[in-house]
Length: 383
Image (cartoon, rainbow, N blue to C red; front, side):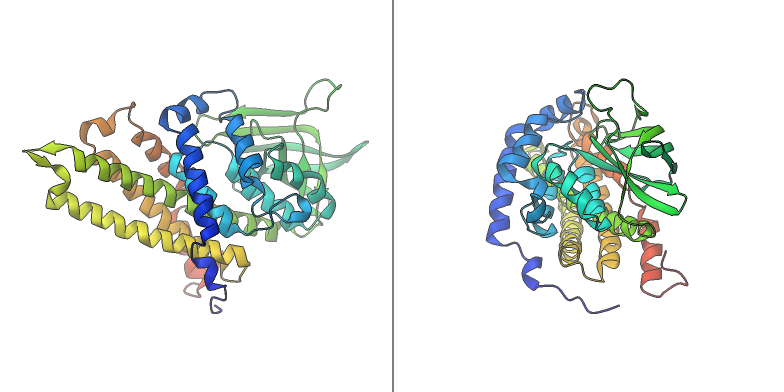
């Protein structure tokens, strides 16, 4: 592996990022508390569309890491990571991960200027939600030429935000090999019927919706050229892992803060339970795990911001560190709150669900350890 070659400033939180964090934290505190999150996930779309519009229009979150020529802010993933961390801190159910990270990187990775000009401005403005299909899970989709152009047939299961996304970027088998296709599953205005069926799946984490998507001759357009799919998929999944790591740092930080507040106020035997040595040790262990995860996340975000060759190693290392920290944080969140932490009324269970569901979203920790062993030359493969 090569030496890490990134600007050290990217590893530090600049004044601009601190201001962005403060603005986002205030906005989320106002509109994304635990009760608001419960209401949002029960709504038809699964998130607060007014908040989505404010994040895009007032703060420019959606376009932070997109080039200015496509309506973005021209910053890097290091700025977007701040937004993802704050979103993860409150379990914001808005589809930032599938739209801005996965679909955004898929379009940029395809290098298809026409496709980028058509869809990235909508993503940046918040007008378009998007996702990828066949990246995270194996797809059984074929592409064929119909009288009016390309059409897709087949199905993909557990597509992130697959039920409601305006744009799907799909990996499909074409006559000239696997290719990336873009399709808008809702029929154009003035036409009848849809050739794309989308069925919501019941999943562990209600704040991150998934769906089964069936294509029945769905019109689609190719993005990029044949032969690009493996590289695009690898890059998109690594971007997703880095984004997830940032979210997990935010969620772990919330769990630690909430637990510290509780053990400082809850008394037993005439003293705050946080003063007991056993509790102090558990919280100290959690703090060490969190700081390690924060460092791994910052390193991975820097690698993605600079597009360094170390990104695959950094992404998998962050996945291991941050999912582990999140698991510990949510476990302590529940246990150190005592009986109330086990109730449905308490927000801790929402964080437990997010942590457990995310553990396998882009590969388990064991998958990433095996991948790291290959990338570092410790096994015979770097799969």
